[in-house]
Amino acid sequence: MRALRKSWKVFSYGLAALAFAVLVAQAWFYAHVLWWSTHNPTSTAFMREQFERLRAKDPHARLQQHWVSYSHISVHLKRAVVAAEDAKFIDHAGFDWEAIEKAIEKNERRGRVVAGASTISQQLAKNLFLSGERTWLRKGEEAAITWMLESTMSKRRILELYLNFAEWGDGIYGAEAAARHHFGVSAAALGPEQSAWLAAILPSPSRYERGHTTAYLAGRIATIRARMPMAQIP
Image (tube, rainbow, N blue to C red; front, top):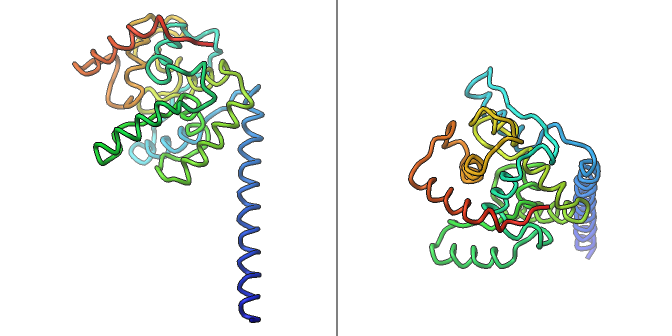
């Protein structure tokens, strides 16, 4: 009986310590979200992780990223990214449940993960704070941070942060660096075709260099261009 009470006591203390650690972690995330609702981050967890990967290959590797305000990003790029990545961005509260259900059904039919349904808010949560590993624990943390972003920031701020830290090539982050690297123009000067191209490569940006287009990409660009007029942006 004494051993049982001791085991229960150890278990209870361990559980309490774990709960406290989780609470501290969530408070840390939320404090950063609150700060970044009015202040611009200098980098993200994803950028730092990728920088270490690039440095392992090339000790002289550098990241290209230059912050620009929402008003200095082409409206064409905003529409293209929303059309390509999250058509319901304006309307949902961080999660597109219909898209999630369809992705689950598609993955079950294929027997493996072939489709995702991450919204722009979810992608931003992952980019700002989390590693690239795919675990249920990371997905749960992503959901919690997504809720924090949506409950704290405006849609305009979420999209501004996303566009400034999205990956658009090895070491290329944000709309300004992407526009200058791929097309030699500023983010404000991007036209509809250029914007559609940048939106089209978001799922696999390191595969495409300086405007290179494949047959698959051309079809993807055409689809995005057709959807851009209907894309609602903040």
